[in-house]
Length: 158
Image (spheres, one colour):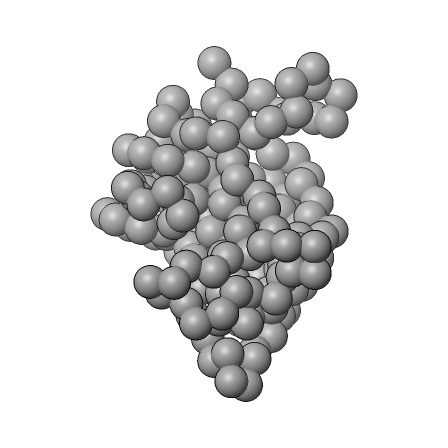
């Protein structure tokens, strides 16, 4: 699947949401996903488990792997997070937890604004986790985020 050359605006929920619903009887793998040259213009989500202008949240026994997100520009949004990756199980929306997230590259992502909370990246348990996530050229308010920085959480650089 490829999403490219697009402008996205989400009043409530995510501009990009991958993996939440699936078929737990016949588990699915969502792979070879490319999101390229996208502008995200708004995001507002009240539910704690469903935040992130860009969200990879597999549930219903889904596995999400081999994802490339590149050349994405995010304008200031009204509330919550820039990125969320959660292998999840929510009894309200899922019949089983997701199987995991693997091999995600986020390249040339920029955010300009003041409303982003700290990103969440969490597995469900030891066997349903997140592995091999790579950030290349993440820029927050003009500041390139690097491994050598003193504070290693993704937040708003002020």
